[in-house]
Every structure is written in C-alpha cells, then in structure tokens.
Length: 307
Image (cartoon, rainbow, N blue to C red; front, side, top):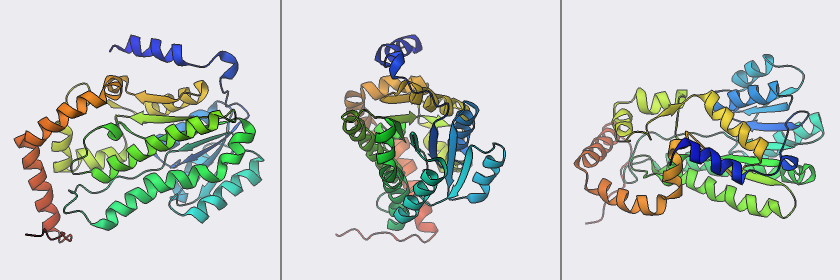
C-alpha cells in the first residue's frame, strides 16, 4: 500500500471541517512532556496557540521545556503510575486553566531485554504500571472535562502492539492493552460528543531507542531482524506532527511512519505466518539463548522449570 493510498484513506476518513479541533486557546495535557515525543508535541501545540500542561516525573526536564515557552505553560511533576498523584496533577491543571480540552497519554518505558522465563517480575509490573495503568491514571480524572469541552484524548500505543514480542514482551503487552483502551474510549466518548484516538509509531529516534537498539548489542541484533521498510526511523518531530495532525482531525488512529499501515491492516494474516517463521528461525533461537544467558549472568532470578 503506497503512501498516496494511505493519505487518500486518511482524507476520506477525516471528519468534516466543522468537526475538526483547533488547539488555539485550548488546554492540552501531555504526559512524558519533558523529553522526546512529548516535548516535541508540547512545543508544536504551544506554538499553535494552545495552553500546555507539561506533566513528567522528571521535573527538571519539564521545567526546562516550560521555561522555553511562556505563561500558557504549566509544569507539573507527577508519576503516571501514582493514581492519587495524577488526580492531583489533573486538578492543578484545571485550577490553573479552568478547563481541559485535550489529553495526550504519552509517558512510557521499555524493560531490559529478557524472556518471560528469565525476567524479573518486578520489571514486568513496572512496565505495566507505567504504560497501561499510567494511561488510565492520566485519562480517567480528566474525562469529565473532556466531555464538557467535547474534546479529544490520544493514547500512545505502538506498532509493537501488533508485532511479536520476544525478549520484550512486557512492552508489547502494554501497548496492545493501550490500543484496546483507546478503541473502547473512542466508542464510549462518541456517545457524548467527544473523541479519542490511538497513536501508533514504528521506530522513533529517541534516547529510549538509542539505549534499547543502538547501544545494546542484543537490542541491535533484535532490531536487525526487522525488514525494510519496517526498520525505517522517524524523528520525534515527525511523531509529534503525526499526533498533532490526529488531534486536528479527531482521528481514530494515526500511524507513523506510514509503511506500518499494511501490517496494521493485515496483522491477523501476517502474524500467523510471521510467528511460525520466527519460531523456526535459528537466528531468533540464538538471540533468545543469548538474552537468557545475559540475564542469568547478572544474577537475575530465574523461575525454576518443573521436571
């Protein structure tokens, strides 16, 4: 499927002009706003006239972004996995600006490479706590505001939601869960005149990507298994543009880069074949053995296998 066809489908599925969402004079909440995609999106929407609430666990990073803006920026330190803390953070936004029109649940983490057999259960809990529960904690306390404003919610998933998850299953599990959360929210909010969408990304050139794929030998080998064009990277600016465009169109979903679109559309067929091929691939077997050996070498607990 060409980029031209993808763009045509996007135009056909876009809402009429009168239903588009102009962020000028609107209030946007963004988690993970101190770095990466969140920062790029905050800067773009602020430049478009929005008031922006920058929520991040790293207050120094978020404050640096806020200082580059002005009075329409609010910096709030909060951990998305802390439900009470996020409720208080959303209350601070409401108190400052009087309303909330758009929420972007962007904060997320990746685990250290490990198989399900060898991973530390605490690592699994941490990823789910931030990537899944954190999305709920971000969105839920703001929903009455979104309904009142007939606003829009974006939850950031990933192409990982429909790709095999060997050696990184907590991340794939979490992004698949976020996808389903966003789809359910889209249908529910439609009944009250508000909207929601899911943002999917392939490989985004962020510090997290560098640490996971570039600076880690096993991560690099795992990344090398991705065929062209799925191994194409986009910048954080590209990712921010995709989300901003989706907000304006009240899009049910956005995918960047667009080369992932065919996989997303035909994943049911592709994954049946792909899972079978990967399960038989000696390169994958070798990678799994190396991941498990490294985990064992650094004294991570290994769950005994009954004999």
